[in-house]
Amino acid sequence: MAYNSYPLLLVLLALSAPLAVFAGDPDILADFVIPASTNPTNITGDYFTYTGFRDISTPAYGFTLTKATMMEFPALNGQSVSYAMLTFPPGSVNPTHTHPRASELLIVAHGTLSVGFIDTANRLYTQDLGPGDMFVFPKGTVHYQFNQGNSTATALSAFGSATPGLVSVPLAVFDTGIDNTVLAKSFKTDEATIQKLKAGLAFRCC
Image 1 (tube, one colour):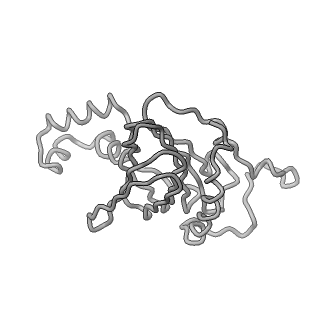
Image 2: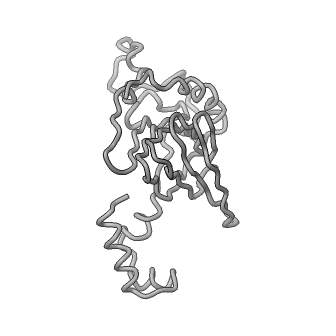
Image 3: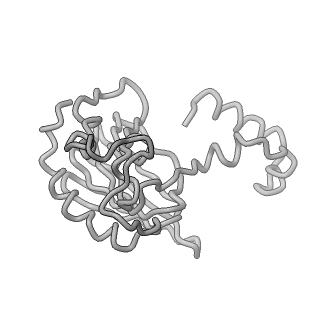
């Protein structure tokens, strides 16, 4: 998938600027941050360029995420912004998750997505999105994206942090060693059901 197939990227770049203003990342005392072992005189435009979104193939099965955070793109250090490209074959879902350090601004580039988030009052907000539509997921809220259509959907997300973080709800609950008894009591079910949920998660990993 060629990088020039996303004309909506320019719109996302422009509209994501306010995210940096309200980000939680600490302010820096310079224009940008470079690795400690790097000679500043050797920095060129290459350091500020990321090409990881150029050639992304459509997965045969399952949702895929390609990130451009500070880990993949060191020039983002101190800039309070990062991006992700999301690819959804038909029927695939980005499972419920949170970003503890950033809000997320998503724009659909191709296809359609059904999205939603839950606020701290346990109210669910949902929307069906088409190409060019945008949706914001407030910082720290549990949210998801789902492709109910018959064709592949792609989207781009901007985050108000260079390191937004990711907490997968299914993995955090069922794949971190929490005792089965605790989970059974929490979900008001029995341990056998919890074990089935864990087994299913291992078979169909998020």
